[in-house]
Length: 379
Image 1: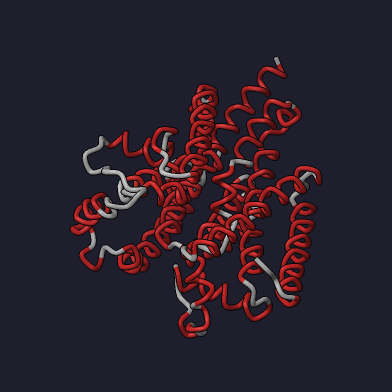
Image 2: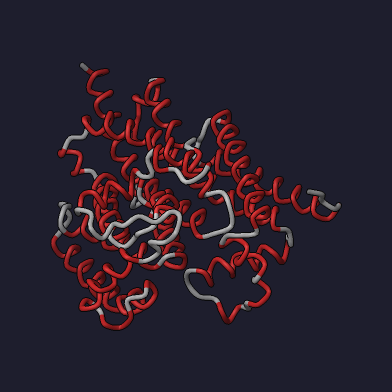
């Protein structure tokens, strides 16, 4: 594969810009330089691998987002695919190179991992000095599947960044309220139904499970109901339920369970038990279910995630539910898992989209583990 001078120049500009962003967020989030550099190089590797795979196969959503961009103008700005196309169009004004734009999109995923790292470090406190804690942290942040799916042109890199910022902001929601707001708006443009789940989780965390004044709870409840009513029909239309509302939800779930069953990554979840659907969404494919090199890598990652979950879940204490960031993360994780697992029939889709919810589960588990370490250190 040969690059002309202009292509090399644009890739170099994208790399320099990405390095600038990396330096900025490394400084702002107080991430150790050595960890930031390692994470940057690791994520950049997957950005280039993602780009090479897309170009060599000439297949993937990234092709549509980039090469069909010229067909879209500002008056087509909308949500979902339209928003990603709009972002791609803006970037193409400056860098009309698939490789360069892919590197910039990969920066979104890298920034998300920096925010997630900062969240773990801040919440861990003195527990962060233990090498075992750092090993568990880096085992997650350096998972190949996580870095691969958040490293290229598409919705996943943007929404992963926004969701990781929400975890970080939840540690100090008053001081970081603007980060909260911007992230929710960004999610609403990329995947509106996920934004509704986030807003619902925030509302439940504050209205039901907090000790704030009743007057504030009532105001928030009224605002939540109003916002939900205004966006309800639009979100149902966006996800394909139409205007039938609640009466169509059952039919929609059944149709989604049966869709794409002939694809290479499809599994029949219609006959699975409820809890098996949840487990399948989070932890499959297994090693013996791989249908190619990508599935093999994903299955190895899943094995690591299962081992980490089994080891860390024993440290969870229900009294941690009094902490806002834990409440929000748990409620969002459970709501999103139930909704997504019951409407996804394809392993390929779940392999990509589960990174919208796994960071929240892992944050809760690592927080629980850090509290256990603190108790031992203070004993």
